[in-house]
Length: 205
Image (cartoon, rainbow, N blue to C red):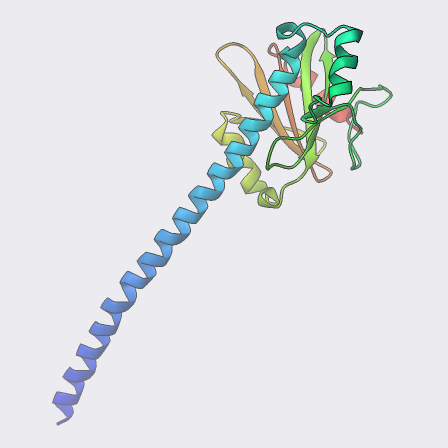
């Protein structure tokens, strides 16, 4: 009887282990799928922001400036766009110390608004966008993963802040960093050296 009981117990344990394993594997697969979708959403948001910033920069060169009569006609008919407006951030923004900037608010459909201004570093035009840090980017690992997805695979330390730098084949650069709970994206029309980026980012107060 004891021998039979021992065999039965072993069979039961083997049966339970074989039932548990698929459940664990299924749970792991679900988590991996959720994590993949989360990363795709973050990447989509950043790409959208960069595209809008680029459009804002190129807009004066693509579309001619409206005359005053055209502007008044559009205003009178109510055909104005709220996608890009002149407005200051509704949060504690960061700008170069001692320098005034002109902010624009961009409000993409179904996305949080963010704010943009333009500047130059040693004559190189740059575009800076700022928004409050999304909840999906609260950890350093999440920010690093986001930067890696956009080839910002090199980093420097600026006053304790990790700054991710990506350089394209066209010699333009993309900068991603988090400072004072703000997600900051910077694009430049040409390659700048680390000292130039260090100096500029340090000046953001």
